[in-house]
Amino acid sequence: MKKKMNRSFPTTFILSALIIFLSPICEAVWLTIPHTGSKCVSEEIQSNIVVLADYLVISDEHSIFPTVSIKVTAPYGSVLHHKENTTNGQFAFTTQESGTYLACFEADGNSHGNKDFSINLDWKTGIAAKDWDSIARKEKIEGVELELKKLEGAVEAIHENLIYLRNKEAEMRIVSEKTNSRVAWYSIMSLGICIVVSGLQILYLKQYFEKKKLI
View 1 (cartoon, helix red, strand yellow):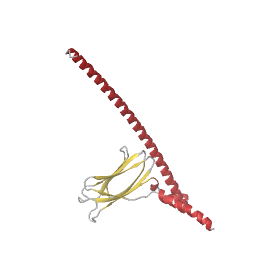
View 2: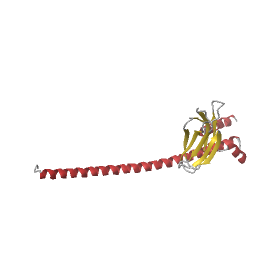
View 3: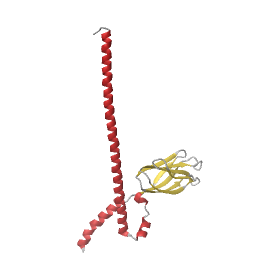
View 4: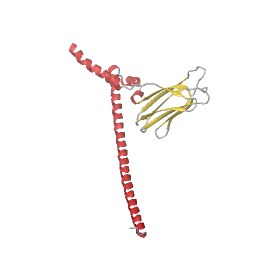
């Protein structure tokens, strides 16, 4: 009995460590919004990824209730979420293309009393945006089985991210090779032009000196 327990302990420990390591850590981002201008956050996300975010305006002075305008845009400029005169809210979307997604916050009017204030932004992507409580109730799983489900999702997310990075690396390598090829052709062309110009200069000088009977 003791031998079985000793053998199962490392497996349980490794499994727990993997769950802790692979599970995404969701931390709120604190943004200081200037009373003039705006503050933006961005993240590079691949396609077909669920994004979920909650935001809340926080003021140090209880007599001031600042409101903001929020605008979330996709890599090609399409607006995914836009709301004005708000103090809190939530937005969610599924990415359609890979690239940098941008969320910008701007102070509205004079609601801020010409003072800076803060926004708490809880930004979740991929597996972190999943409602695991609903999944557990729907599939009737709990405990270790639920943690294994989370681990499976985390591994799939990491695998998809690695594929995305590999494809992006291949695209960058192709662009780099094309750039190097163009630079090489430009160098050859520049060298050829220099040789032709030098030959023409020599020919011109030779004719000039022959006319002056210097040679």
